Image (cartoon, rainbow, N blue to C red; front, top):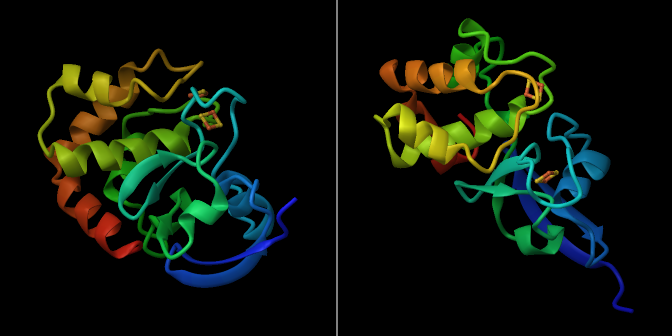
Length: 170
Ligand code: FES
Ligand code: FES
């Protein structure tokens, strides 16, 4: 069996070099090695989206990516979005629109929403629903989540989203 592999990765603006088992999933590396427990695991079938992060600016389900695949890359998690006490505009919109109940899906939803707005700064409601199809919420019925994303789009969150993804952190 191959031994540990050394990876270098920048997560939320901080560079890390670590030896990881080749089979280690990115989500487990983030949570267990780096303590990034804001990124959560909601399933073992890669369909809930709770573990969504940005890998080189693209949203990915971090339970479906190996840590070694992130070698040399920039990862942004939910924990890298806020600027001190100032929430990212999409986080702020989720707060203002009451877009969460238990909050378990929220980190992944927000990461996916930012990616969606980066690619489509002015989505229709239908486009938001389709863009979030890979993220499941068991509590809200999605209505307020969609409202939050539309509100963030109206507030120009896409500009901020692009900056976030490009730089890893703001
Ligand atoms: Fe990754 Fe569910 S934990 S998709
Ligand atoms: Fe509970 Fe979405 S707020 S799963």
